[in-house]
Amino acid sequence: MIPAYNEERAIRAVVRGLQADAPAGDVIVVDDASRDDTSGSARAAGAIVLRHIINRGQGAALQTGFDAALRRGAEVIITFDADGQHTPSDAAALIAALVEHDADVVLGSRFLGREAENMPTARRWLLRAALWFTRVVSRVNVTDTHNGLRAFRASALERIRISEDRMAHASELLDLIGECDLRHVEVPCHVRYTEYSMRKGQRWHAALPIAFNFLVGKVMR
Image 1: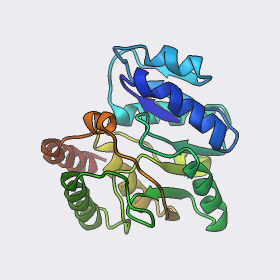
Image 2: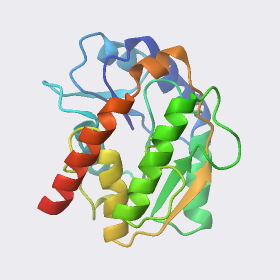
Image 3: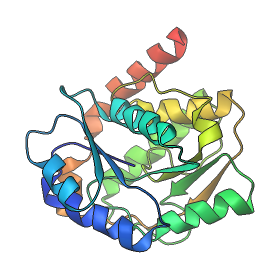
């Protein structure tokens, strides 16, 4: 399942890569009210496309995709970034880890095994700060906090629900995994940073608002 916003340039290749290399299953793209033809490109590549009428944020797009996948009877739901920085074949490793470890959730980590490709130093330090924040606040022992490559059993997603519509959802998901005592493991994944994906990524100055929104949401839950 792929949340997407203004990804017309990349989404077709991402969908086709998943269809070729990932375990058999439907590819759902949730277009979060893109201003370009993300929906048309995803549909032309063979994806099932859902579209928000207004831009709500990546967290809301993920929850829309989760709800749709559960309605379709999916047993395992994989989340995948739309900008091409993930490797489709890594999806198979997530499925294998679910079975091998009898896990509820498998999280991809760019800090285990193979080094992320072309990761800027500033992004590395920002992710380290996010990791410290997660370990202190949520007490979930992970090595990567904002990685969009994840696999969930349907039974796990039936127990959690994202309330943070925008980027604080990544911290919220880990918090919910801890609160619900879901069995989780991490597996190495290959992340490739490109000029395109860096333009689409979060900026360092967004970190404090994201942390604030997460903390407020945590108190309100």
